[in-house]
Each structure stands twice: as C-alpha cells, then as structure tokens.
Image (cartoon, rainbow, N blue to C red; front, side, top):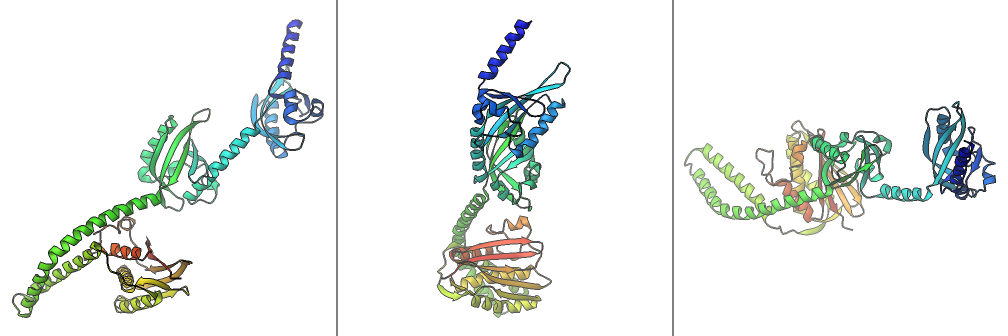
Length: 468
C-alpha cells in the first residue's frame, strides 16, 4: 500500500513539475503553497518569491472580486470546479491574460484542504480577440450575435443602422421585434435553418429601426456552436440606397417608354384634334347644336390638349435658358401669381428667407413651373384653408434648400411611394405626369427633389446648387 502511495505521489510530483501548464497549490485563505516551473516562467517570479505571496497579490484588483467569489462557492461546495479568464500580474508589473482552471481537494471528512489552480497564458489569444473585436466594431457592415433569438451583441454600425445611441437599448431584445411584420414568417424560417446548422447567404430583408422607420438590408447568417446549441451570427448591410437606385432606374425605364409612346401619340392625335377643335368653335359661333354639348366637347378637347402638352414635355428634351438670378425674386413672382387662388381658398402664402446668398443659375420659367405646381398641390391639400410656408436655407457652401410646407392631411404612405410613377394620380383631372416633370426639371438643374409627409402636412424639399 505504501509502495503504491509512494508510486502515485512520485507520478503526481513528476506531472506537477514537468507540466507545460502553470500550476499552483493554494490554501483555502489564498496563500500560495507550491508552484511548478511553468507558472514561475509565466509570471517571471521564482518559486520562493511566489510562495511568499497570496493569490490576491498576483491578481489584478479589478478581477480579484469575481475570482474570490468563485473560490468562495468552491469552498462552500456549491460548485466542484470552475474556469475563469482573469488577469495576473507579472513580476515586472504588467498584466497577463490567463485562463484559470480551479478545483478543490477535500479531506475524507469533506473539509477543504487546498485548491489546485492551473494557469494557461492566453495573452496572445486575447490580442487576436481584441483585433477581431476592433475589426467587428469598426466594420462598415452591421454585425449582430443572436442567442435564443435575443440580440447579445451589436457593433457600432448596427447601432447606426437601427438609429440606436446605446447598446443597452437593444441587448436582450428579440430579433423578431425588429423585422417588418410582413416578413416575420419567412424570417423565422431563416432563423430555424441557421439554428439547425445551415448558413444563409445574401438574403434581402426589411429591418425596423427604433424610430419606426424601415430600412432595406441584405444579410448573411451563419451558425456558431456555443457548447450547447447554435448561436446565430449575422452580417448585415444597408441596401436602402441600392433599392432606391433600382427603383429610380425602373421609373426611368418607364419614363423612357412613356416618352417614346408620348411622342408618337401626341403627334398622331394633335393634328386631327386641332381640326376637331376648330370646327367645334365655328359651330359654336354659328349656334349649330346644343350649347351644353359644345361646352362638354370643348372641355374634353382642352383636357386632351393638356395631356398631350405634358406628354410632349416628357418625350423630348426642353431647350433651357439658364441665367444667374436671385431665387428670392422668382419666389416673390410665384407668390404674386398664386395670391388670387390662395385668397379664394382662405390660404396665406408665407415666405421666409434664411440666407443672404440666393443667386443660382437656372431657367426661370421652368423653376416657376415647379413652384406653381407644388403650391397648387398644397392649396388642394388644405380645403379648410391655412398657411403655406416657403422657406429658403443655405444647406452648405455649395447648395441651397427650399422647403414648401403645407398643413394639410398629408399623403398616405402607400400613395407617397408611388408618386414618381408615370400616369399615377389620385386627382380626378390629373394626368399623373406633373411630379415626373417637376423632378426632371430639378434634375436638369443638378438639383434634388425630396418629399416627406405625415398626417400633419407635407414638406417638399428642393435642393439646388448655388452660384459662387
């Protein structure tokens, strides 16, 4: 028996001394009783130096509280062993990241005798982790880690995507809450597939922001096994601009087709229409036929002429006459032109110039056409009257911003997303071409047209380059 014990003791001593893993024997109050050469090498102390210290002496103060808590649980028998990442102090007073594996040795009566602590130097691994973490944090794409369908991590780009200022606002929340209601069923299917071990590549989705707006995203999701089940790592990029571009190209294609059709239709119809209108006017003057019938016929002919005129505006480039002019003078002329119509509808047009620089290069008549079109729309949007604001701001050193704001009931979202489509209109006598004509004019001025709307009204934003 003694021979076996000696043999086992010799094996333990040999394994202890020659182990590549640093090992320490520590008593229940934290005094270091014995260390092996590997631990001395990791920490830079000699064996004699280490056994004169306590576990607290060689542990970062910020990390010791958690370490001491786990040791207390071991001594009380709540846990039998534990692993923890913690920083230990090198002799030359710098930190070393280590993975500690701690187990308790008890007497036959179950009393704690000492702790066996194995120490692995993971400093290089932590540096790699830190570089990887910094890469993820600074990535131009959103990175999200999901466990049990709850968000556990999100990088800074992800916060910007979702319009969130602090990570605490989203950590722990269900990822389902951020998916567009119309897309949730198919999204749950994707999540099930990833949790089952499948990688999903480049799927387009609609993700919700905390401000209630939705953005188009493209994501790739892959499983990462956490020891119990698969977590879900998601790489996501905002493709809202891409979708806008696709829609713009689609509308441009529609417009091109509309223009080609318009040119043919307009020229084929206009000549016989002119003859019909001329004979109707002659017959009207000579009182041949019913007056009411003539009025209806002429009204409809005039409407056809209006449609043809707008079709021709789309079908061929317009000869523009650009000159340098003060934008404020154009706005004043438009207000003067629209004042009678505004008064009839109990509407006041208010001008507000918030910049000293209003000189732009433009085709004056075309810009007037744009402003008149939008002001007419604003008047129609306020049947009970109210104010229309025209505000001018200097957007930056190179451009100016004009806002035309009404206090109508707004444009419903399903209509707002279709207003750029050719021939789409909600007006009884509309052609569905006015918005596209206005947009074309602004784009030909190297500008940009923006529209936002709510139940409290609509704001038209027109960005034009300044003449410097």
